[in-house]
Image (cartoon, rainbow, N blue to C red):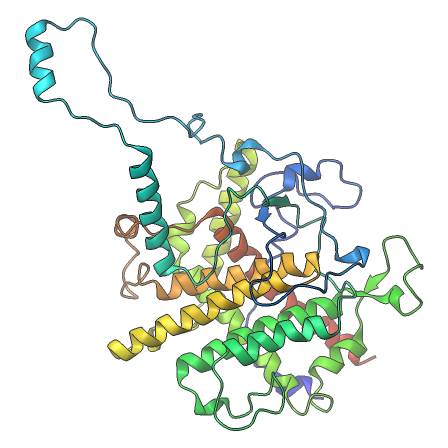
Length: 432
């Protein structure tokens, strides 16, 4: 059986982040849940125009649509801070009404004007955005955009929607052929990188990460396939969803993929180890976060869940070794910049996906991977293996992860974990 040779065995930390509550709300099944708004934590702009071609392929199938949230907790929106302030107050200098004229004169001479003009504030924001962009591997969402919406992932699960055809192939063709580093020689298809060994380590890692994400997404779609589609879309109002073994085999069986299927699954494990390493490397930083939503009980539970997760992650002795990448002076720095720019371009391609639900999960998972790369290669988390990360040093660099990046990181790793778990399910079903 090809299953026995396609992947190595690794211990898997299974994380169902899309079913748990990282940022508020009750942990309940989504069906019939009237308090769904309390569970919203993913903010995304699904209305951005495709920056590369005219988007004429919007999916009209109802399974492609996304249900946005309307009742958003103030803590999630960031309008209330943990100390009770609304976050809009400015620092003001206290004045005394009992001072003497002499004191007033002395204070006038030593007066420190702490006011800032709007132009200065805007300039500081541009500086901060520039500094953040130097570390970021993603074209991040503008959380203040009026087009951004909060989405409950429990009400919008990742699954097959019927979005197929030339539009989907154009997305992946653009990712592989225009943004992945290609080996020399003729490539049979946009996923055929049979001579990838000719590439340097960093370029191979780029391709394997993208391929691993592609494999993970394909596994999700095959595991939650619209089975009612075989008899038309009228079998049930919500559709009948389940495992489609034939679809899984079509994408991964070596006989049906020219031997590429097992390599695609190996790349899934490669990406899993990469993101696992990022979580381990950023563990002290993640453990220090408040995860504030305004619900003290749930915020405490989330902090405990994060501590438990990173404790398990840190127990792994071997992870992806990023220390072997981008070494060698100027050429390495140039390659790192090229690596980052290629990946940012892929995040922009996600705005060209014609299915809203596919776009939602594509943006979420590509941002999660980009966040993992930011952790691994920003240099802010680098320290000897026998030393604890100095958080004060990290904060001095003004490095930070946004709420959206953290949400995406956890959910992306959860999706990879679920994909690996589904491999076992497909193996059992294939043996029947």
